[in-house]
Image (cartoon, rainbow, N blue to C red; front, top):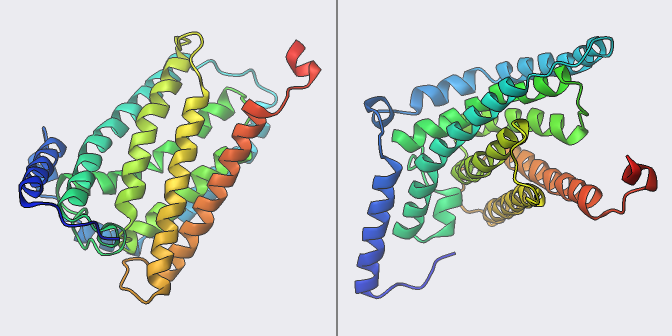
Length: 287
C-alpha cells in the first residue's frame, strides 16, 4: 500500500521528523549496539533450532512435576522477588520500545510503503541499536518462562493460555529470526510496547499498590489490540505471498504466524469475555 506523494515542503518536514525519531532511538546507545552486525547471530539461530525445542520440553516437564511437587508444599510468598522481576522486565521492554518503535516509525515516514515494511525491508532493522534489541527480544522469550516458575511456586492457577503463549512465542520467535522474517520488526515493536505496560502493572500488583478503581481490562484490551494487528500483518504477508510478490517470510513461518496470532486472538478474547463480561455465579460473588 503506497500513500499519495506529499508536497515538497511537507515531505521535507516529514524527513526531518524521521531523522529526529532515529536520533531518539539511538539515545545512549553503546558502541556495542552501534556496531552490531546480525549476520553471525542469524547463522547461530539457524544452527540451533533444537535449543528452543529442548527448553520447551524442560519447561513443560517443570509445569507437570513442579505442580505435583507443590501440591504437598506450602506456597512461597515471593512478593518482592516477583515485584523485582516484573520491574526488570518492564524496564527491559521500555528500553526495547525506545530502540525499535521510533526507528520503525521513522522508516514508515521515510518510505511510506506498507509492503516495504512487512515484506521487503532487507537488513534495515536487523543491524545497529534496533537490530541488537530485535535479537534481545528473541532471546528474552527464554527468561520470560520464569513467569511460570512464580505461578507454580506460589500455587496460583496456571491456565492454558499462559503456558501455551509462552511455548509458542518462544518457538516462533526463534524460527522467525533464523529465517530473517521481514515482519519481525512489527511483532517485536508491538511486544516491547505491550510488555513495558503489562509488566509495570504486574509489578504494582505484586506490591499491592495498584490504584483503587484502576480498570484492569485495559491490560487485556492492549493485548487483544496487539493480536488484532498481528493477524492483520500475517494477512498482509499472506496476500503478497499469494500474489507472487517477493516477501521475506518462509511458507512454514507464515503458516505458523497465522495459526499463532489467530489462536492468541481467540484465546485472549475468550479470556476477556469470561473474566469481564460473563455473569459470575452466585457462589463466586459470595466468595
